[in-house]
Every structure is written in structure tokens, then in C-alpha cells.
Length: 320
Image (cartoon, rainbow, N blue to C red; front, side):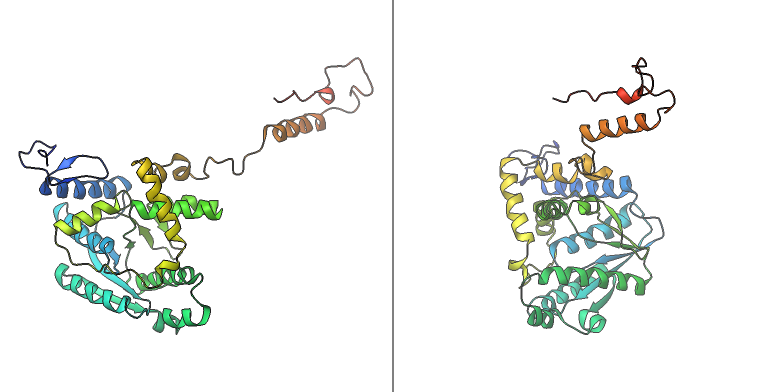
């Protein structure tokens, strides 16, 4: 490997997928952490003195999020109280094992942990739900239940924010999913770094601009403990198709992920896709109708043909 591009004098051990920079381990840690700090500061994600519940699944994203938030909270004095909030969906062979990782994170990071289960909230486990409805669309059901469970957990913990581990790849996949489904109305919400769950407790995404590959490398080089097994129902998820499409696009254009989530139209509101826009013909017809209705009937050109300037005679220009 070449020398570290920061000219620190050390040998690079990786090439950042996000920027292409060759970095040593220490410089990669610093760059990764500083970018998340910059994201938090620029978006003003937290108020000093707030309590933040980290949605912890035991996976790489939530584990890295918990580790980095704890580190940045101490380094930059955010004055935050950090707690872990986990949801037990009741998926045998998946969630029961991942919760052991969350409990280990609780000990390693010195954070309080609250676990809520589908069984106690809804009277059903996800295994029982799938047994009733089958494997089709079960991820949709689970997603709705999980979001509601996080809301209830946040309310019980009396937190000010819920921080989720959604990364840049996740958000880009969601954008593609909504486009493929024709669900344009959700495009703005899925790219927002702060969303309101409806109960007054905002959800924030500190890892919004972090690439999945870099999260994996950070966890690997930091030797963080996280759960890697995929959910047993994940192969049936629609998201998988969007993920494959995104990876294929990324091979052609490595900047595609950031291009998707930073789209100006998505961040400002209604995407610039012609949605809700009037055509030129409709605009001209409406303008002509308004002018005609304002014409004085007594002096109208229908009564006095010589008044050729009357608005009633206004013609719509041809449109090529």
C-alpha cells in the first residue's frame, strides 16, 4: 500500500470507498468520526443536555453508532445522556441471539438498556404473525410494528431523541424502493436527517452520510462486537431488489449513493419530477380564461367588433 494521503508518515492500510483516499488506520478513524461530528453539528441534531435513545439491534450500524456517539459526546462535550433501546420482534434464531450482543454493548459502553418485545406490546411475536399471514409482505408488517415499538419505548424512557443507524446505503435503497413502487410522496421523508414520528420525539440519522463499507471497516479495525446474521425473513424483502440495483449502479458510478441522497429536489420537498406541475397548455388556457372572465360585457368586442384589443379575442400561442 502507498503512504497515507494525509502525509502523516504512516503506511496506508485501506482506500476509502467514499473518497478514494489512501489512509492509515488512525487517519481513517479520525476522518470517519469527524465526518459524523460535522453531520451532527451542521444539522443540529441534538440539544445540549438531551437524552438520546439509540435504536440498538446488535448489528454493525447500531453498534458503530453507539460507540461513536459515546466517543464524540465525551470528546466534544455534547452533554448528552445516551441509552440503548432494543426491540425484540420474536424471531427465533435471529433476534434472540442479537440481543445478547446488545447486552454486551450495554456493558462495554456503560449505557442503560431497555428491551421491548412485540409479544408484550401486541400479543404476537413475528414468528406467530408470519405463521398466520405467510412470508409475503411480512417485512412490511414488521417495519410498521417496529417503528411503533420504538415510539413507545422512547415515550417510556422519556427521551428527547431517537437515533437510528440508517446509513447512506440504506437511505439510497429506500429512495429507489419508493421510486420503483411509485410512492413519490415518501421521497422527501426518507432522505430527511430528522423526522418526526408523530409523538413529538424526533428521529435522527447521524450516519446518514456514512457508507456501509466504511462502517464495516470501522467496526473491524476497532474490533467492535456486533451481530452479523441476517434476519431469516430478509430474503423475501423487497429491499433486496433495490440493494442489488444500487450495487450494480455503484459499479458504474461510485458516487451514485451520495448523488441519490443529496438530490436537491428530494431535500427541498416535492421532487423535480414533474409531479404536481401544470403543463404549458393548461397554464395558458387558465390565464386566457381568467382574462376573458374579467372582460366588461357592455364594452365587449362581441358588442363592438372594432375593439379588437378585447381580451376575449386573445388567442393562445401555438406550442411547439
